[in-house]
Image (cartoon, rainbow over all chains, first blue to last red; front, side):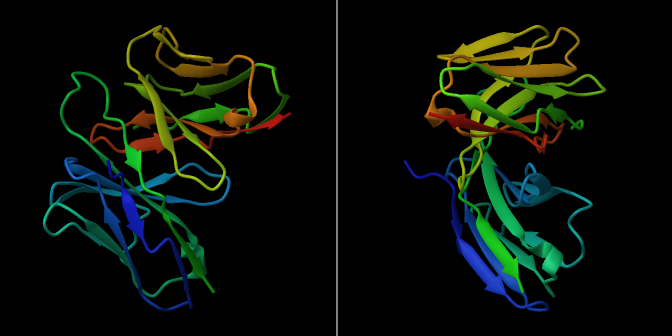
Length: 118
Length: 110
């Protein structure tokens, strides 16, 4: 049983550089979410995909951020021209879309990619 | 999803004591999910509450959803060191995205 995986686990970059993170969801899950978490805070929603379609983006997702899920399987999150304020843990989660008649679906989180911008 | 507020922010207990964290909203919530995040780990789903006044139990953990669906609580009986971590409540949005509270960080002194 493979859970959600994320790579790399840690990334240190200099301000102004571009970075890309990858998320591999649980294989049968249609929905994939990206969150950002800073110290002492709960995860903040960034964007989500239903299969390959990006259906919602948070206002937190500035134009320097872009996410893709080209074949409805893995997803990438790219941050261009990184700033020190981008330092955070970037979490990916996936969820099924069947088997429930009420409420939302539980989300399965990956271990995250910790980004440090120097 | 609606914003949710959690209290307390921190709780330090002696092993064996009980622990409760509260989640509140100014508006009616469609559902509440609870997650646990161990130090250095990622959030792990615990449970979802959907119905008004719902109560669910998982061993020493009791989850409640208020009658007005504006608040929820998580109560742990007789805490153990394995309960250490941050407990988050989250409201599920219409598109499935979660709006998390800031969490309650629990530490347990053996």
